[in-house]
Image 1 (tube, helix red, strand yellow):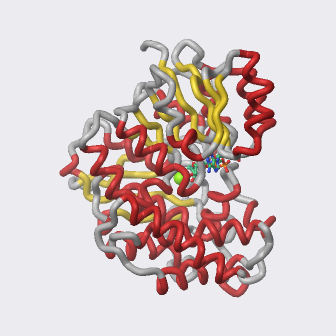
Image 2: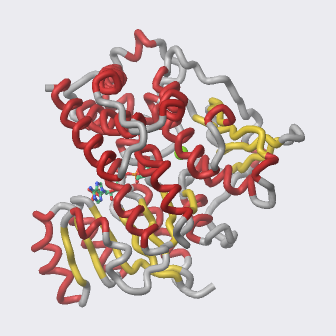
Amino acid sequence: MRQKQLAIIGSTGSIGVQTLDIISEYPDLFRASVLVGGSNVDLLERQAVTYKPDKVVIADEKCYSRLHDTLSPLGIEVEAGEKAVAEAAISVPGIDTAVVATVGYSGLEPTLKAIEHNKQIALANKETLVVAGELVTKRLAKSRSTIMPIDSEHSAIYQSLVGESHDSIRRLLITASGGPFRNMTLEQMEHVTVKDALAHPNWSMGAKITIDSATMLNKAFEIIEARWLFDVTADKISAVVHPQSIVHSMVEFVDGSIKAQLGLPDMHLPIRYALGCAHRLPTQRPGLTIADYSRLEFFEPDFERFPLLRLAYHSLEKGGNVACVINAANEIAVAAFLKGAIRFLDIRRIIEKSLETMPFIDSPTYEDYVNTNAETRKYALSLIN
Ligand code: NDP
Ligand code: MG
């Protein structure tokens, strides 16, 4: 395999840092040609000094001059701002793969640009497919671009589907740890703190997805993500609570057989598989010792205590801009929760109120998604203020 040139969009985040670990593990196979951060200028600078990319982009324009002053003398081009983020994977010649690892709505535009320019995409940012899955898959069908999922559940499904035909799929079974509040009553959830919600039992991740895991909206998002990645309708996708997070997801086939992928709760594995484009790259990193797990449990999810899970089915049934509204309201609500401005269960209330209020658009254009996102954010903020 020749060395692939990567643009890592969100290199300073949890997935971004682990993607750089994989580059360090296989320096002959991968090079970080472009690094993109949001506002963590210290880390981005250190990454640039270590990985020597051709270009560094930072979303926050206030950080430009500092980055420029330190990185220009090293021959590294520096850009800042939203447009530069969106075009990061196409503005340097020879980029093979865009690793889309920003958080939230900000993943959509870089993904669409990568599709337009026939780049391979390693997609961590599930919100892209939640917000505009239909538009993204339509554009993908007209492009030479392909998407390799990084999300562990979707990587597991992808791996389980190798060698199988699409019409032999009976059901996708997406596993969920259940998050830190798996055994709590709604009454108890009224009083949880930010610290409680950030204490995920199995996975170490960025703050936003950790809160989404606690509300289980993350699992709803993953059902939507699976619908678009694997072209399987919502009635054939279920969530299964699996507290150990060892079975990363499963596919049930028409003959009754179920295939699963197992591993430690460690994102290096799905990132490695996505960057290797489904080739298995040998690693020295510790793997799963199966005998350490005498008990792997599976339960039906509780839709009464985790009602946001239902939103996957609701939004896929209604279609249009519904999931875009849910995502935007959630981003604002989660940010407010993390700042201590609202309580945990208010996240759900803000999403539900936004869904009631925002106008439904049946067949949204790209501009409709942009407007829905902006208007819903404004509305959700007004609820908080
Ligand atoms: P983090 O919050 O750790 O990192 C987010 C990254 O995006 C940071 O590099 C941040 O920059 C950057 N960023 C934020 N806003 C912008 C913006 N507007 N423009 C450019 N860059 C921006 O998130 P995670 O790594 O946890 O998650 C990333 C994505 O991957 C999410 O969509 C998540 O759902 C998904 N995912 C994550 C998993 C995990 O284990 N972490 C597992 C499966 C999926 P900075 O910090 O410099 O501001
Ligand atoms: Mg996941």
